[in-house]
Length: 166
Image (cartoon, rainbow, N blue to C red):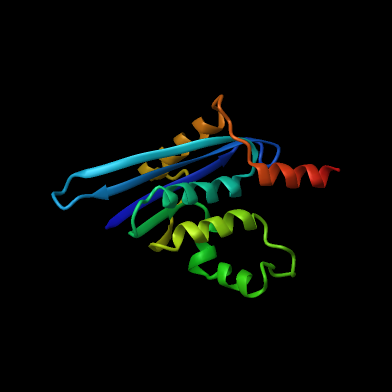
């Protein structure tokens, strides 16, 4: 089964305020009918990168069988982790980045790897805010979720933020 996914993340006050993600999943059935599903959620305190990751995670976790996936994101952070194998390097270095600092957002990278595992995923970068219809749609979903009333708690990020403040 071939699925095309578009994702975006948003943070209103990066790291000190709400954020959200949006995703659109598209499947064309054997009769040629197009099926789409929109996903979005907002968090009360998070970062843009965490929301970019959550868009990809939520979309992949929504798939109920192994698929061939083309995933489009305007986040070079997400895309290059796979196209330039940053993720492989981080894992080989026990989740350490270039200067041997711990990789940020490890909890979400591990969740993304688990969500990706049953599928064949090809990551594609698209320029954000450049008129790409699906990217613009995902941006609207993400920002609407960030501005929503029922904001979730990004427990890992909030715990880490509280630890850094104290």
